[in-house]
Image (cartoon, rainbow, N blue to C red; front, side, top):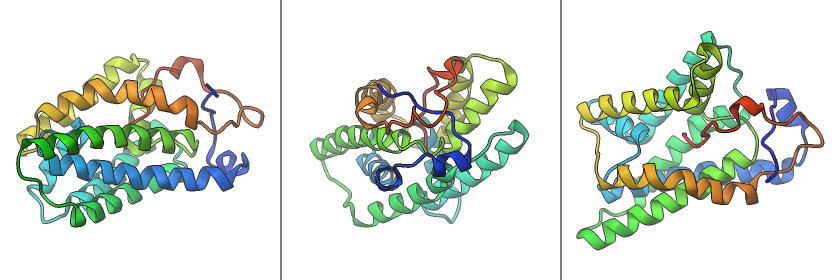
Length: 227
C-alpha cells in the first residue's frame, strides 16, 4: 500500500494530482453522509459519534446533519490547544458530511419490517467503509474527530488505543444518555469498519510519496475513519 503522507495544508495543495484527489475527497465525503443516513434510517444502532449526534439532535431544534456540522466545528476549536493544523479535507469534512446526511435523510424512506432495516444497516456500513477509504486516501488531512484523537496522542503521550477508546466510550455514553440509538448496528459497525477500511484503503490511497515525507511511524496504526 502507498503510505499516507504527512502534509501541511500548503503541501496538500502543492502535492499535485488534484484532478484525482479533489473529486475523490468530495465523493468520499458525500458517500459518507449517505451511509450515515442509511444507518440512521435502519434504526438498528449507530456508531459512537453518531449516537452522540443523534442524542444531541433529539434535544435541540437542529437536524441530524446540522448537529454533525456544529459538533465538527466545536471539535476543530479543540485542535487549537493541541496545535493541530486543519487541511482542506478537515474543513470540507466538517461541512459536507452533515449536508449530505440531511439531503439523504430527506429522500430515504423509513423502512418497515426487519429485512429492509437489516439491508440498510449492511449496505450502510459497507458504504461507510468505502467512503472513509476514499476521503482518507485523497490525503487532504484528517477529519475533525480524528484530528482530536491524534492531537491528544501526541500531546499526552498516551497510546492510540487508550485515547481512541476513551473518546469513543465518552461520546457513546453521553449520546446514549441523551437518547441516541444504540443496538446491533453499533456492534456491527465497531467490528466491521476497521477491516473494511483496511481492505479498501490500499486501492484508494493516492501516491504522493515522491513529493512528501511518509507517515510518522509512531502513528501508523492510528485509526483514521471518524468523520
